[in-house]
Image (cartoon, rainbow, N blue to C red; front, side):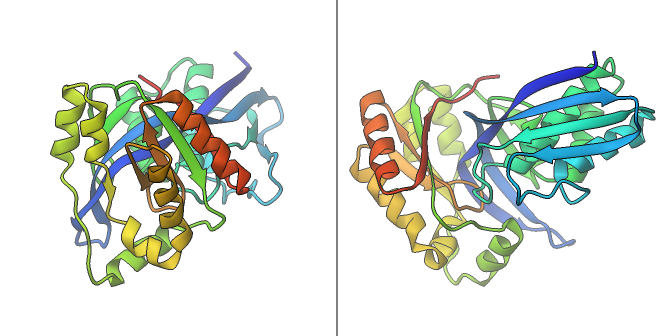
Length: 286
């Protein structure tokens, strides 16, 4: 197999609680991540000429070792001793700087695709270990579905699928750096915490209203102070029928959960009319 082309799906954090800080300075999380049907397209081609050549349809995306997908290919070559060359092309749809793991899911797709193309030389557990060296969200992005992720994201527990719903995803004009977001959170005077067990209970009961009622994100209030547009979009979604709305990850994308498809599309269209990049997607199961 010398060529593969696959979707690299984005994620939302249905809830995200910052639970503490480790001795090494990394923040610990309790977060429920959900794969959603918004994706980048990744194509990987084996070549005889050695080296990695990465291209992207967005001119401002780095295409060298600064790109996490490039780093993923390097890690795979280092681990397996693959002797050929690689061409990787990324077509971006997932908003950049939005907290939807666009870079992480590109890296995870490259790892999964290379492993398949080379006959699965790396076990699933070792692939996850390699993924963690690339970023906290990359191990989750190797998978699909609904997971509780703890620690810095590496402790993953499979959860029941998100009940049927429609997810409106809206990218504010501002973007947020994850590194900066943690600094902003650390300086925030009134940190907010959320109980993941409430959402897990709702998932087990297949109750989308209970799941939506348990949504929350420790980053949302401090980041929302710096970027009021986030909170404005959230309020608009609630006014347009969302069961609940929240920021995902460290921002800046806002998502709303709808149980009515017509209301979801009306909200999408209304936000698009205000020139926001907005999509209506469904949750992706395992």
